[in-house]
Image 1 (spheres, one colour):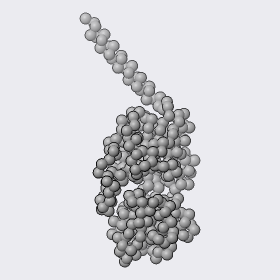
Image 2 (cartoon, helix red, strand yellow):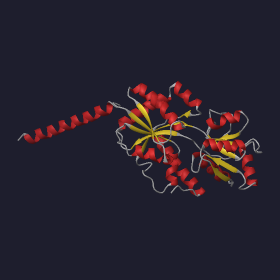
Image 3 (cartoon, helix red, strand yellow):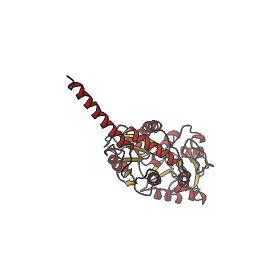
Image 4 (cartoon, one colour):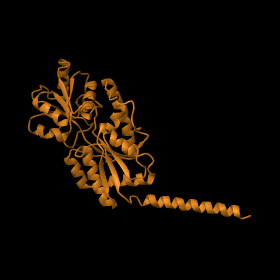
Length: 325
């Protein structure tokens, strides 16, 4: 007569043992190498941020954090590899603006940006700088807009390539200002910068590290930065928003996401350790030297930012008639 009760007790004990084992396994994270996938080549902004944080996490957590560069197809190759990885807390993905631009450019994606990947934290923010050749008779954003309106289609806007962040920043600017210019895509950022330096192109949006040396040398003129607030790397420059275009914002942001389904306690631990690393003075100094502002956020805040950017860039891509299909 006692057997049914005994059976239930055995099952209950087994369940408790299983849960305890699972909890112990998760609380021991990490107990092997953790991979930070970077969907871009080594040496770029997202790679730099990932390597600095991998170094700190290795030191504080006692396990190796490696950067795995999976470049190609506009960040699709590396992102898909991470999205398809086991959700066990040993693969994370560093993402930047192509993460929200790709869904706008492509009707068919090899993964779902919001369903297959979940946010961990927004890490850093980097402005773009609007620069012109010194011969251009425009010393403010409004003067550049007035010049473009007086010469529709005659001003050349350089970019690092079609559908890159600088190109889309330019398209958002053109739409916001109601101007029409000629876009010239180059094979990369250095070639586009050279075009503006030579006067072949009138203006462009570029990263601070690429243009600040030329600005200081008087070879380029800076008009504004693209973040909503002034950038610490160049606080003397106004924002496009304060120059007559309220709400204009382009953030070359970098964040961390994980394959959907990673245990919540592992995500919480990773998030906590990231914020500790971002608060370290030497980390802040290394990022500041490269023009980055440290952000740090909750997963919810980063997720809301991603959702907002997805909507914004879909409109920009649609208005510009662009497609990568």
